[in-house]
Length: 191
Image (cartoon, rainbow, N blue to C red; front, side, top):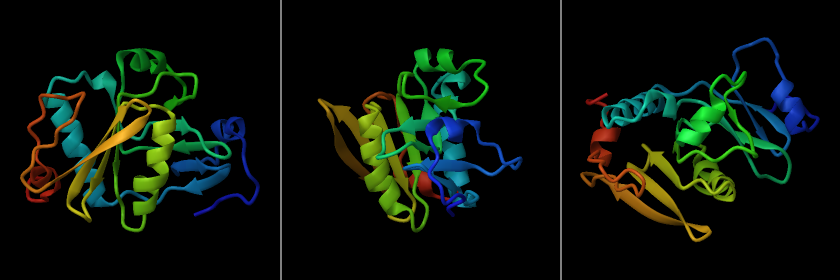
């Protein structure tokens, strides 16, 4: 839902406070209220968070709902479902007033988006190009609707794509010790 008819700059957006707990993204200068997360998407994000913690990832390097400034025709921010931060980025964000990865900061190692109904184009197309412009080394699109996980790896200026389904273990270039299958991740009996 669009909040303002006037385009905002990034500075205006970063200073914006309407006194509510509403989560916003800025898309090409337009302030958009994010709908509440579905229970399915919340559970998938929690499964992934718990899984990365079990792999020994330090909690300070995992971040839910941290916003990231990306390139757009005008100011644009995104709020991925989960991020894995590099040590350098985790250090930069320590003590920050706002959990925002700015353009002058290093990119996260991994950004994970969980597709919501009606948002497929945003996750597969728009965010893909925005995250590529930030040179994020790895981008996962977890799609409970299609029952698949798409892993995009940044290679020589472009994303190379692998799609995993069913009993396939998700193969991720920066996380070579994964044994998580798509079925386990998306099976609500395990949630």
